[in-house]
Length: 463
Image (cartoon, rainbow, N blue to C red; front, side, top):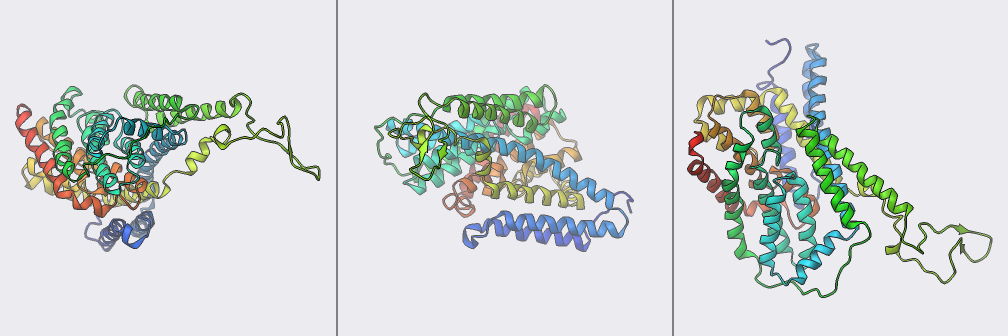
Protein backbone atom coordinates (compact mmCIF):
# COMPACT_ATOMS: atom_id res chain seq x y z
CA UNK A 1 0.00 0.00 0.00
CA UNK A 2 1.25 3.47 -0.82
CA UNK A 3 2.32 5.11 2.45
CA UNK A 4 1.62 8.62 1.17
CA UNK A 5 -1.77 8.05 -0.44
CA UNK A 6 -4.56 5.54 0.15
CA UNK A 7 -6.66 4.09 -2.65
CA UNK A 8 -10.21 4.33 -1.30
CA UNK A 9 -12.05 3.56 -4.55
CA UNK A 10 -13.17 0.17 -3.16
CA UNK A 11 -13.47 1.33 0.44
CA UNK A 12 -16.74 2.10 2.24
CA UNK A 13 -15.76 5.77 2.44
CA UNK A 14 -15.38 5.89 -1.33
CA UNK A 15 -18.80 4.35 -1.93
CA UNK A 16 -20.30 6.72 0.62
CA UNK A 17 -18.72 9.69 -1.18
CA UNK A 18 -20.21 8.61 -4.52
CA UNK A 19 -23.65 8.17 -2.95
CA UNK A 20 -23.52 11.54 -1.19
CA UNK A 21 -22.40 13.33 -4.36
CA UNK A 22 -25.14 11.68 -6.44
CA UNK A 23 -27.85 12.53 -3.88
CA UNK A 24 -26.69 16.14 -3.60
CA UNK A 25 -26.67 16.57 -7.37
CA UNK A 26 -30.14 15.07 -7.62
CA UNK A 27 -31.48 17.51 -5.03
CA UNK A 28 -29.83 20.36 -6.92
CA UNK A 29 -31.56 19.24 -10.11
CA UNK A 30 -35.01 19.23 -8.53
CA UNK A 31 -34.56 22.52 -6.69
CA UNK A 32 -37.63 24.08 -8.32
CA UNK A 33 -39.78 21.18 -7.08
CA UNK A 34 -38.47 20.86 -3.52
CA UNK A 35 -37.80 24.61 -3.08
CA UNK A 36 -34.62 23.58 -1.26
CA UNK A 37 -31.77 25.82 -2.36
CA UNK A 38 -29.15 23.81 -4.23
CA UNK A 39 -26.24 25.01 -2.10
CA UNK A 40 -27.53 23.32 1.06
CA UNK A 41 -27.30 19.64 0.02
CA UNK A 42 -24.12 20.19 -2.01
CA UNK A 43 -22.16 21.89 0.79
CA UNK A 44 -23.44 19.29 3.28
CA UNK A 45 -22.39 16.42 0.99
CA UNK A 46 -18.95 17.95 0.39
CA UNK A 47 -18.41 18.28 4.14
CA UNK A 48 -19.39 14.65 4.79
CA UNK A 49 -17.21 13.38 1.93
CA UNK A 50 -14.11 14.97 3.41
CA UNK A 51 -15.12 13.96 6.92
CA UNK A 52 -15.21 10.33 5.79
CA UNK A 53 -11.84 10.65 4.06
CA UNK A 54 -10.29 12.33 7.11
CA UNK A 55 -11.60 9.60 9.41
CA UNK A 56 -9.99 6.84 7.35
CA UNK A 57 -6.67 8.67 7.01
CA UNK A 58 -6.65 9.50 10.74
CA UNK A 59 -6.96 5.80 11.53
CA UNK A 60 -3.75 5.29 9.51
CA UNK A 61 -1.96 8.24 11.13
CA UNK A 62 -1.94 10.23 7.86
CA UNK A 63 -3.87 13.36 8.78
CA UNK A 64 -1.36 15.73 7.15
CA UNK A 65 -2.08 14.39 3.65
CA UNK A 66 -5.80 15.06 4.01
CA UNK A 67 -5.27 18.62 5.19
CA UNK A 68 -2.94 19.35 2.27
CA UNK A 69 -5.38 17.89 -0.27
CA UNK A 70 -8.37 19.76 1.15
CA UNK A 71 -6.47 23.05 1.15
CA UNK A 72 -5.63 22.48 -2.52
CA UNK A 73 -9.35 22.16 -3.32
CA UNK A 74 -10.12 25.17 -1.14
CA UNK A 75 -7.47 27.24 -2.93
CA UNK A 76 -9.03 26.40 -6.29
CA UNK A 77 -12.44 27.48 -5.03
CA UNK A 78 -11.07 30.64 -3.42
CA UNK A 79 -9.70 31.80 -6.78
CA UNK A 80 -13.02 31.07 -8.49
CA UNK A 81 -14.99 32.72 -5.68
CA UNK A 82 -12.98 35.95 -5.85
CA UNK A 83 -13.27 36.03 -9.64
CA UNK A 84 -17.05 35.53 -9.55
CA UNK A 85 -17.50 37.94 -6.65
CA UNK A 86 -15.86 40.79 -8.56
CA UNK A 87 -17.78 39.99 -11.75
CA UNK A 88 -21.12 39.92 -9.95
CA UNK A 89 -20.30 43.11 -8.04
CA UNK A 90 -19.64 44.95 -11.29
CA UNK A 91 -22.85 43.57 -12.80
CA UNK A 92 -24.84 44.70 -9.77
CA UNK A 93 -23.22 48.12 -9.99
CA UNK A 94 -24.14 48.41 -13.68
CA UNK A 95 -27.69 47.38 -12.88
CA UNK A 96 -27.81 50.04 -10.17
CA UNK A 97 -26.70 52.67 -12.71
CA UNK A 98 -29.50 51.53 -15.11
CA UNK A 99 -27.01 50.24 -17.71
CA UNK A 100 -29.07 47.17 -18.59
CA UNK A 101 -32.33 49.08 -18.54
CA UNK A 102 -30.78 51.57 -20.94
CA UNK A 103 -29.66 48.76 -23.25
CA UNK A 104 -33.11 47.17 -23.05
CA UNK A 105 -34.79 50.44 -24.03
CA UNK A 106 -32.33 50.94 -26.88
CA UNK A 107 -32.92 47.43 -28.27
CA UNK A 108 -36.70 47.75 -27.95
CA UNK A 109 -36.66 51.18 -29.56
CA UNK A 110 -35.13 49.56 -32.67
CA UNK A 111 -38.34 47.54 -33.03
CA UNK A 112 -36.56 44.17 -33.05
CA UNK A 113 -38.74 41.08 -32.77
CA UNK A 114 -38.23 38.52 -30.02
CA UNK A 115 -36.58 36.22 -32.56
CA UNK A 116 -34.13 38.92 -33.59
CA UNK A 117 -33.37 39.67 -29.95
CA UNK A 118 -32.79 35.96 -29.40
CA UNK A 119 -30.06 35.94 -32.06
CA UNK A 120 -28.57 39.29 -31.07
CA UNK A 121 -28.03 38.25 -27.45
CA UNK A 122 -26.70 34.83 -28.51
CA UNK A 123 -24.17 36.23 -30.98
CA UNK A 124 -23.04 38.84 -28.47
CA UNK A 125 -22.55 36.12 -25.83
CA UNK A 126 -20.54 33.99 -28.29
CA UNK A 127 -17.99 36.68 -29.07
CA UNK A 128 -17.82 38.28 -25.62
CA UNK A 129 -17.03 34.90 -24.04
CA UNK A 130 -14.00 34.50 -26.31
CA UNK A 131 -12.28 37.27 -24.35
CA UNK A 132 -14.26 37.09 -21.11
CA UNK A 133 -15.08 33.99 -19.04
CA UNK A 134 -18.38 32.25 -19.76
CA UNK A 135 -19.89 32.98 -16.35
CA UNK A 136 -19.37 36.74 -16.57
CA UNK A 137 -20.71 36.71 -20.15
CA UNK A 138 -23.80 34.71 -19.20
CA UNK A 139 -24.60 36.95 -16.23
CA UNK A 140 -24.13 40.07 -18.36
CA UNK A 141 -26.42 38.86 -21.15
CA UNK A 142 -28.84 37.34 -18.64
CA UNK A 143 -29.42 40.76 -17.09
CA UNK A 144 -30.28 42.16 -20.52
CA UNK A 145 -32.58 39.22 -21.35
CA UNK A 146 -34.43 39.48 -18.05
CA UNK A 147 -35.01 43.19 -18.66
CA UNK A 148 -36.23 42.70 -22.26
CA UNK A 149 -38.40 39.65 -21.70
CA UNK A 150 -39.96 40.38 -18.34
CA UNK A 151 -43.43 40.01 -19.90
CA UNK A 152 -42.64 36.77 -21.79
CA UNK A 153 -41.11 33.96 -19.65
CA UNK A 154 -40.80 31.60 -22.63
CA UNK A 155 -38.47 34.03 -24.38
CA UNK A 156 -36.39 34.41 -21.22
CA UNK A 157 -36.09 30.65 -20.81
CA UNK A 158 -35.04 29.93 -24.41
CA UNK A 159 -32.78 32.97 -24.60
CA UNK A 160 -31.00 31.86 -21.39
CA UNK A 161 -30.44 28.38 -22.85
CA UNK A 162 -29.11 30.02 -26.00
CA UNK A 163 -26.75 32.22 -24.01
CA UNK A 164 -25.40 29.25 -22.03
CA UNK A 165 -24.65 27.35 -25.25
CA UNK A 166 -23.18 30.44 -26.93
CA UNK A 167 -21.02 31.35 -23.93
CA UNK A 168 -19.53 27.86 -23.65
CA UNK A 169 -18.98 27.62 -27.42
CA UNK A 170 -17.39 31.06 -27.63
CA UNK A 171 -14.85 30.22 -24.95
CA UNK A 172 -13.80 26.94 -26.55
CA UNK A 173 -11.78 28.39 -29.45
CA UNK A 174 -9.89 31.08 -27.52
CA UNK A 175 -6.80 30.26 -25.40
CA UNK A 176 -8.05 32.53 -22.62
CA UNK A 177 -11.80 32.21 -23.13
CA UNK A 178 -12.40 29.28 -20.79
CA UNK A 179 -10.67 27.39 -18.00
CA UNK A 180 -10.25 24.31 -20.25
CA UNK A 181 -8.46 26.19 -23.04
CA UNK A 182 -6.37 28.07 -20.50
CA UNK A 183 -5.21 24.82 -18.88
CA UNK A 184 -4.36 23.25 -22.24
CA UNK A 185 -2.51 26.36 -23.40
CA UNK A 186 -0.48 26.65 -20.19
CA UNK A 187 0.43 22.96 -20.40
CA UNK A 188 1.89 23.62 -23.86
CA UNK A 189 0.20 20.71 -25.66
CA UNK A 190 -1.51 23.07 -28.17
CA UNK A 191 0.16 26.21 -29.58
CA UNK A 192 -1.61 29.55 -29.17
CA UNK A 193 -2.60 30.02 -32.83
CA UNK A 194 -3.95 26.48 -33.28
CA UNK A 195 -6.82 27.07 -30.86
CA UNK A 196 -8.51 29.26 -33.45
CA UNK A 197 -8.90 26.26 -35.76
CA UNK A 198 -11.85 25.39 -33.47
CA UNK A 199 -13.74 28.55 -34.49
CA UNK A 200 -16.02 26.94 -37.10
CA UNK A 201 -16.83 23.88 -34.91
CA UNK A 202 -17.66 26.30 -32.08
CA UNK A 203 -19.94 28.35 -34.34
CA UNK A 204 -21.82 25.20 -35.37
CA UNK A 205 -22.14 24.14 -31.74
CA UNK A 206 -23.97 27.40 -31.07
CA UNK A 207 -25.82 27.86 -34.37
CA UNK A 208 -27.43 24.42 -34.75
CA UNK A 209 -29.48 24.42 -31.52
CA UNK A 210 -30.17 28.16 -31.91
CA UNK A 211 -31.59 27.60 -35.40
CA UNK A 212 -33.97 24.95 -34.03
CA UNK A 213 -35.02 26.95 -30.95
CA UNK A 214 -35.65 29.93 -33.23
CA UNK A 215 -39.00 28.47 -34.32
CA UNK A 216 -40.22 28.22 -30.72
CA UNK A 217 -39.59 31.89 -30.05
CA UNK A 218 -42.79 33.96 -30.44
CA UNK A 219 -42.78 35.82 -33.75
CA UNK A 220 -44.31 38.98 -32.30
CA UNK A 221 -42.42 42.03 -31.18
CA UNK A 222 -42.20 43.32 -27.63
CA UNK A 223 -44.08 46.46 -26.74
CA UNK A 224 -42.48 49.50 -28.32
CA UNK A 225 -40.62 51.84 -26.03
CA UNK A 226 -40.57 55.45 -27.05
CA UNK A 227 -39.19 57.18 -24.00
CA UNK A 228 -35.48 57.49 -23.50
CA UNK A 229 -33.92 55.90 -20.44
CA UNK A 230 -30.81 57.77 -19.36
CA UNK A 231 -28.18 56.00 -17.32
CA UNK A 232 -27.51 57.22 -13.85
CA UNK A 233 -24.35 59.17 -13.22
CA UNK A 234 -21.21 57.08 -13.72
CA UNK A 235 -22.77 54.28 -15.79
CA UNK A 236 -20.38 54.56 -18.73
CA UNK A 237 -17.39 54.86 -16.43
CA UNK A 238 -18.35 51.64 -14.61
CA UNK A 239 -18.60 49.85 -17.97
CA UNK A 240 -15.09 51.09 -18.83
CA UNK A 241 -13.78 50.06 -15.41
CA UNK A 242 -15.23 46.58 -15.86
CA UNK A 243 -13.49 46.26 -19.25
CA UNK A 244 -10.27 47.47 -17.63
CA UNK A 245 -10.72 44.90 -14.87
CA UNK A 246 -10.99 42.06 -17.41
CA UNK A 247 -7.86 43.35 -19.17
CA UNK A 248 -6.05 43.56 -15.83
CA UNK A 249 -7.01 39.98 -15.02
CA UNK A 250 -5.78 38.74 -18.41
CA UNK A 251 -2.49 40.62 -18.00
CA UNK A 252 -1.94 39.19 -14.52
CA UNK A 253 -2.36 35.69 -15.95
CA UNK A 254 -0.54 35.96 -19.28
CA UNK A 255 2.35 38.29 -18.48
CA UNK A 256 2.98 37.91 -14.75
CA UNK A 257 1.74 34.32 -14.23
CA UNK A 258 -0.45 35.37 -11.32
CA UNK A 259 -3.96 33.96 -10.78
CA UNK A 260 -6.67 35.82 -12.74
CA UNK A 261 -8.48 36.36 -9.44
CA UNK A 262 -5.61 38.60 -8.31
CA UNK A 263 -6.22 40.86 -11.30
CA UNK A 264 -9.97 40.86 -10.64
CA UNK A 265 -9.41 41.93 -7.03
CA UNK A 266 -7.26 44.79 -8.25
CA UNK A 267 -10.10 45.67 -10.60
CA UNK A 268 -12.49 45.75 -7.67
CA UNK A 269 -10.49 48.59 -6.22
CA UNK A 270 -11.18 50.59 -9.39
CA UNK A 271 -14.87 50.41 -8.54
CA UNK A 272 -14.23 51.16 -4.89
CA UNK A 273 -12.31 54.34 -5.69
CA UNK A 274 -15.03 55.41 -8.12
CA UNK A 275 -17.69 54.72 -5.50
CA UNK A 276 -15.77 56.99 -3.13
CA UNK A 277 -15.67 59.68 -5.80
CA UNK A 278 -19.45 59.49 -6.35
CA UNK A 279 -20.09 59.83 -2.64
CA UNK A 280 -17.75 62.78 -2.18
CA UNK A 281 -18.77 64.63 -5.37
CA UNK A 282 -22.58 64.70 -5.57
CA UNK A 283 -24.38 66.66 -8.28
CA UNK A 284 -24.45 70.41 -7.62
CA UNK A 285 -27.17 71.49 -5.25
CA UNK A 286 -27.71 67.98 -3.88
CA UNK A 287 -26.79 67.00 -0.35
CA UNK A 288 -25.11 63.64 0.07
CA UNK A 289 -26.60 63.20 3.54
CA UNK A 290 -29.21 65.33 5.28
CA UNK A 291 -28.16 66.04 8.88
CA UNK A 292 -31.10 65.97 11.26
CA UNK A 293 -31.15 68.37 14.21
CA UNK A 294 -33.66 67.42 16.85
CA UNK A 295 -34.46 70.37 19.11
CA UNK A 296 -37.92 69.25 20.28
CA UNK A 297 -39.51 70.92 17.27
CA UNK A 298 -40.02 70.34 13.54
CA UNK A 299 -37.15 68.40 11.92
CA UNK A 300 -34.66 70.69 10.13
CA UNK A 301 -31.75 69.98 7.80
CA UNK A 302 -28.50 71.85 7.87
CA UNK A 303 -27.72 73.86 4.73
CA UNK A 304 -30.98 72.84 3.07
CA UNK A 305 -34.01 75.10 2.60
CA UNK A 306 -37.31 73.76 3.89
CA UNK A 307 -38.77 73.73 0.39
CA UNK A 308 -35.94 71.73 -1.22
CA UNK A 309 -36.83 68.07 -1.71
CA UNK A 310 -34.34 65.36 -2.45
CA UNK A 311 -35.26 62.43 -4.66
CA UNK A 312 -33.79 58.97 -4.35
CA UNK A 313 -32.25 59.25 -7.82
CA UNK A 314 -30.36 62.40 -6.86
CA UNK A 315 -28.61 60.96 -3.83
CA UNK A 316 -25.47 58.98 -4.76
CA UNK A 317 -24.65 58.04 -1.19
CA UNK A 318 -26.56 54.79 -1.72
CA UNK A 319 -23.95 53.66 -4.24
CA UNK A 320 -21.68 51.62 -2.02
CA UNK A 321 -19.55 48.76 -3.35
CA UNK A 322 -20.09 46.70 -0.21
CA UNK A 323 -23.85 46.94 -0.70
CA UNK A 324 -23.32 45.40 -4.14
CA UNK A 325 -21.28 42.58 -2.61
CA UNK A 326 -24.06 41.92 -0.09
CA UNK A 327 -26.54 41.52 -2.94
CA UNK A 328 -24.59 38.77 -4.71
CA UNK A 329 -26.21 35.42 -5.53
CA UNK A 330 -24.73 33.67 -2.52
CA UNK A 331 -26.60 30.43 -3.14
CA UNK A 332 -24.77 30.06 -6.45
CA UNK A 333 -21.40 30.85 -4.90
CA UNK A 334 -21.92 28.31 -2.11
CA UNK A 335 -23.09 25.71 -4.64
CA UNK A 336 -19.79 26.16 -6.46
CA UNK A 337 -17.98 25.59 -3.17
CA UNK A 338 -19.82 22.31 -2.64
CA UNK A 339 -19.20 21.07 -6.19
CA UNK A 340 -15.50 21.91 -6.31
CA UNK A 341 -14.72 20.59 -2.83
CA UNK A 342 -16.77 17.42 -3.39
CA UNK A 343 -15.13 16.73 -6.76
CA UNK A 344 -11.75 17.39 -5.13
CA UNK A 345 -12.63 14.71 -2.58
CA UNK A 346 -13.62 12.22 -5.27
CA UNK A 347 -10.36 12.96 -7.07
CA UNK A 348 -8.36 12.45 -3.86
CA UNK A 349 -10.11 9.12 -3.30
CA UNK A 350 -8.93 8.07 -6.78
CA UNK A 351 -12.09 7.90 -8.87
CA UNK A 352 -11.05 10.45 -11.51
CA UNK A 353 -7.75 8.66 -12.04
CA UNK A 354 -9.56 5.35 -12.48
CA UNK A 355 -11.98 6.85 -14.99
CA UNK A 356 -9.20 8.50 -17.00
CA UNK A 357 -7.13 5.32 -17.04
CA UNK A 358 -10.00 3.22 -18.33
CA UNK A 359 -10.86 5.80 -20.99
CA UNK A 360 -7.49 6.12 -22.67
CA UNK A 361 -6.10 2.62 -22.14
CA UNK A 362 -9.03 0.62 -23.43
CA UNK A 363 -11.00 2.96 -25.71
CA UNK A 364 -10.26 4.70 -29.01
CA UNK A 365 -9.00 8.26 -28.25
CA UNK A 366 -11.77 9.89 -30.31
CA UNK A 367 -14.49 8.05 -28.40
CA UNK A 368 -12.73 8.73 -25.11
CA UNK A 369 -12.53 12.47 -25.81
CA UNK A 370 -16.19 12.58 -26.83
CA UNK A 371 -17.11 10.83 -23.57
CA UNK A 372 -15.00 13.37 -21.66
CA UNK A 373 -17.27 16.06 -23.12
CA UNK A 374 -20.36 14.19 -21.99
CA UNK A 375 -18.86 13.80 -18.51
CA UNK A 376 -18.28 17.56 -18.35
CA UNK A 377 -22.06 17.99 -18.33
CA UNK A 378 -22.01 16.43 -14.85
CA UNK A 379 -18.59 17.38 -13.48
CA UNK A 380 -16.81 20.71 -13.71
CA UNK A 381 -15.00 20.86 -17.08
CA UNK A 382 -11.88 22.35 -15.50
CA UNK A 383 -11.61 19.35 -13.18
CA UNK A 384 -12.14 16.94 -16.07
CA UNK A 385 -9.50 18.64 -18.20
CA UNK A 386 -7.07 18.77 -15.28
CA UNK A 387 -7.48 15.00 -14.83
CA UNK A 388 -6.80 14.41 -18.54
CA UNK A 389 -3.74 16.68 -18.51
CA UNK A 390 -2.41 14.99 -15.37
CA UNK A 391 -2.64 11.60 -17.02
CA UNK A 392 -1.13 13.09 -20.22
CA UNK A 393 -2.24 10.37 -22.68
CA UNK A 394 -0.16 9.84 -25.80
CA UNK A 395 -2.56 11.38 -28.34
CA UNK A 396 -2.16 13.58 -31.41
CA UNK A 397 -2.62 17.34 -31.44
CA UNK A 398 -5.92 16.82 -33.25
CA UNK A 399 -7.12 14.75 -30.29
CA UNK A 400 -5.94 17.43 -27.85
CA UNK A 401 -7.97 19.96 -29.80
CA UNK A 402 -10.93 17.56 -29.77
CA UNK A 403 -10.89 17.12 -25.99
CA UNK A 404 -10.47 20.87 -25.58
CA UNK A 405 -13.58 21.39 -27.72
CA UNK A 406 -15.70 18.66 -26.12
CA UNK A 407 -14.79 19.55 -22.53
CA UNK A 408 -15.60 23.19 -23.25
CA UNK A 409 -18.96 22.75 -24.99
CA UNK A 410 -20.06 19.52 -23.30
CA UNK A 411 -21.09 21.50 -20.23
CA UNK A 412 -23.96 22.95 -22.26
CA UNK A 413 -25.75 19.59 -22.30
CA UNK A 414 -27.04 20.19 -18.75
CA UNK A 415 -27.75 23.41 -16.86
CA UNK A 416 -25.41 22.32 -14.05
CA UNK A 417 -22.62 21.44 -16.49
CA UNK A 418 -21.07 24.88 -16.64
CA UNK A 419 -20.61 27.99 -14.55
CA UNK A 420 -22.72 29.87 -17.10
CA UNK A 421 -25.72 27.59 -16.55
CA UNK A 422 -25.46 27.56 -12.78
CA UNK A 423 -25.10 31.34 -12.68
CA UNK A 424 -28.15 31.91 -14.89
CA UNK A 425 -30.26 29.49 -12.83
CA UNK A 426 -29.65 31.77 -9.88
CA UNK A 427 -30.27 34.93 -11.88
CA UNK A 428 -33.44 33.79 -13.70
CA UNK A 429 -34.76 31.78 -10.79
CA UNK A 430 -38.01 29.97 -11.53
CA UNK A 431 -37.84 30.67 -15.29
CA UNK A 432 -34.58 29.13 -16.41
CA UNK A 433 -34.27 25.88 -14.44
CA UNK A 434 -32.55 22.52 -14.68
CA UNK A 435 -35.77 20.93 -15.99
CA UNK A 436 -36.36 23.58 -18.66
CA UNK A 437 -32.80 23.18 -19.93
CA UNK A 438 -33.10 19.38 -19.87
CA UNK A 439 -36.05 19.51 -22.31
CA UNK A 440 -33.74 21.03 -24.91
CA UNK A 441 -30.73 18.81 -24.23
CA UNK A 442 -31.39 16.62 -27.34
CA UNK A 443 -31.28 19.75 -29.51
CA UNK A 444 -28.09 20.92 -27.80
CA UNK A 445 -26.64 17.44 -28.37
CA UNK A 446 -27.13 17.92 -32.13
CA UNK A 447 -24.89 20.98 -31.93
CA UNK A 448 -22.39 18.96 -29.88
CA UNK A 449 -22.28 16.25 -32.55
CA UNK A 450 -22.13 18.80 -35.37
CA UNK A 451 -19.10 20.54 -33.85
CA UNK A 452 -17.25 17.22 -33.52
CA UNK A 453 -17.98 16.26 -37.15
CA UNK A 454 -16.82 19.70 -38.30
CA UNK A 455 -13.59 19.33 -36.34
CA UNK A 456 -12.75 16.02 -38.03
CA UNK A 457 -13.57 17.44 -41.48
CA UNK A 458 -11.78 20.79 -41.10
CA UNK A 459 -8.83 19.90 -38.86
CA UNK A 460 -7.91 16.52 -40.25
CA UNK A 461 -4.33 17.68 -40.75
CA UNK A 462 -3.77 17.62 -36.99
CA UNK A 463 -4.57 13.90 -36.61
